[in-house]
Length: 137
Image (cartoon, rainbow, N blue to C red; front, top):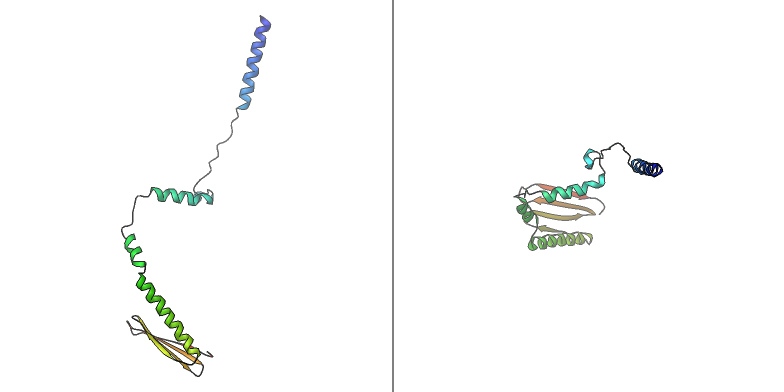
């Protein structure tokens, strides 16, 4: 009986020493998540996405700004037409023809004087005049 008790106590001691050796303690190390405070820069977009998803504030002027900045089909057509006409005027200058273009905002006069291109741009709202001179055109 004494031998049986010895084997049991040795077995318990071995089991206890096996389980206690598997348990080890180490220091706790804090690793920041936010890149502002030293965390990984790869966390930035994730944190920003979470913050924006939780944001309940809506900018009251956002719709007005988006609506005002988006050009209408007529404004886009007018801009493309003006661009095309300016391109045609510059093409005509190469063949020796002068010309002018007047829009709501400005007036452009193109003149070729013996290989010197003179472009006079007049702002119709303020009357301000800009002159561009290109030699050896």
